[in-house]
Amino acid sequence: MAAKTRRAFKGGAVATTITADFNAAATSTTIAAYTGWPYGSDPFYVVFEPGTANEEKVLVTRSGSTDTTLNVAAGGRGADDTSDVNHASGSAVYPVFTAVDADEANELASTLTSKGDLLSMNSGPSFTRLAVGTDDYVLVADNAESTGLKWAQVATAGVADGAVTEAKIGSAAVTETKIGSGAVTEAKIGSAAVTEAKIGSGAVTNAKIGTGAVDTAQLANGAVTNAKVAADAVDTAQIVDDAVTTAKINDGAVTEAKIAAAAKDTQYHTEAAVTAVTSITNTGTPGAGNTMVTQTITPAYSGIALVTGTFDFECTVFSSPIAAIGELEVNAGTNVVQNAQAVFTPTAAGQRVTVSQTWIVTVSAATSTTFALSARRDGTSCVFKCSNVHTTMNIVFLRS
Image 1 (cartoon, rainbow, N blue to C red):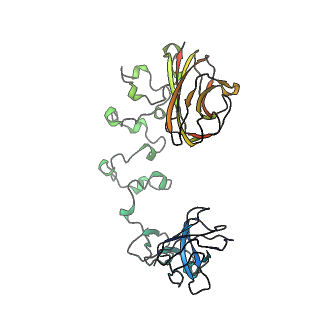
Image 2: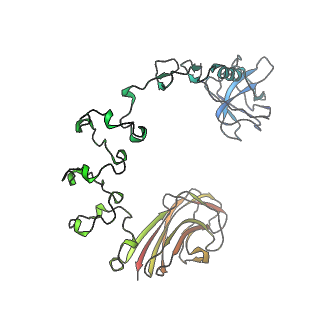
Image 3: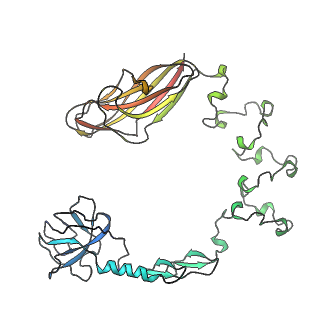
């Protein structure tokens, strides 16, 4: 018996005909019309030559809304007590509700009978009722049961390591009187079992830590974070010479605000990439393109920005040669477009190239400057898209 499957239904499906012979054991055929017919991954039943000696019901699928091909599902020929027979081109066909559909719905509706019943599938496969279990029991997977499930208590082996956490134990549920004297020893605590999340706020005090009990060897790499160090607790005298290296500073931890003006380098670098494939639909004058990616910089000093734009162009439809043009706009509200362009002119559909262009832009101190990469078509006879794989903007700021 085939497994239960969800089937598709739609109202108002037109009756139609097949456009070629559909012989016994054939696995597909084509139809003349499809208005109102189901489509997609869920199968549905159709009837061929209804009301005749050749009447046959078949379980089929149709992949798309305008697809005229009917594909026979596994075991779908001769369904609903009909026979797998030949059907000539021009034979009538339309979607139909079958006894199989009604029987499965009735089976589902009649299986659950009592409060707490659950529905399962046995190896038949048939819908199977699992009655509610004992209070406080849990549902457990068990392949030996006909339903594949059972109600049972959770055995010790069924509790995952780390499953019992502080959050899962009632407030004050574990008290000193419930733990035998000396019951908790180092040997009974798993490696790394005691974490910060399992220790109550303020539970560890100076008085509970022996003198010299915590040294460098007992602290895991990265265990001491900003959040675990009191404000002003660490000053220069408490840091060994050369203790702070590049590897010990998180990416982004050192910001411009944390560096004295005299200590700053003369340049910095930023990069951004397109997050999704973008169709290039706009045409016209410079500055009228589709925006690919934007970045804003606010340098502390005046200087120049070296902006490199890389465009991953692809021609998807070609009629006659026109260009895909990549441009740089600076502070787009004022529509300032740089003169240089990244240009790709295809000669056929399917061509794809990566082109780059670099612009030099003067920027002012303490002033936000927004750069935008945009792309446009120099006409409408080609269709382009800009892939997110290699379309990026790189900005290097040089202090003047």
